[in-house]
Length: 85
Image (cartoon, rainbow, N blue to C red; front, side, top):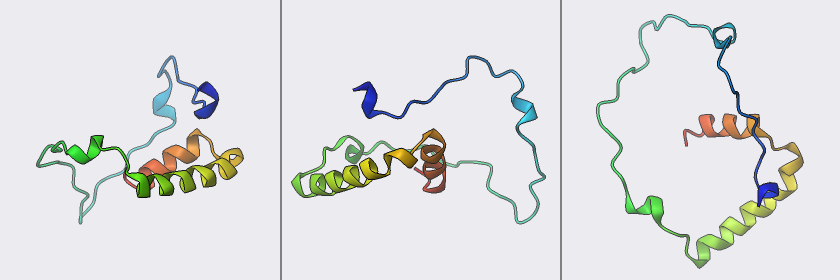
């Protein structure tokens, strides 16, 4: 199964992280910095796809298989963030 997943090298140290990041002032209208509620677990999070949904899953897996050469950990992270998953 190892070949089925994207290899993502993990850092063993966070030394020097501050050289790669910067801060900016949060001006008006400001971005929300607080969360006023916790996520409420949903049974849907654990639900398995039905046969119709599995057809869609298979189609998506085929598309991903065709794109695999262009798929890497950076692309996955960017999509994760942009789609707010």
